[in-house]
Length: 126
Image 1 (cartoon, helix red, strand yellow):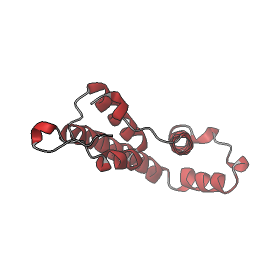
Image 2: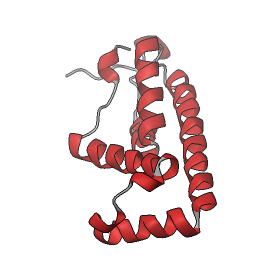
Image 3: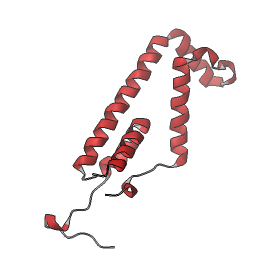
């Protein structure tokens, strides 16, 4: 399989997820620099989390990344199981799945590799 098998997401979805992750990172590691008053309801909610539930916020952040790392490792196993042997493609799936979680993993789990003619099946022709 070539790296062209690697599925990419729409820019809008990736942007929303990326901005959300950066904001949570900001809230966990530099909460005093967040302009809570300028962010409306999001600022009120973030200020509440930072001031009243800071430990919970940090635990949730690290659980989030632990789960995503597990999904990334599972993506590597799925690549192998589905016959995706190109190391660059596997790396792309790992990185994308760690960054975007189940949204990325869903594409990989639904991927149906073509059977080889040597498996006793005819390949579909275009």
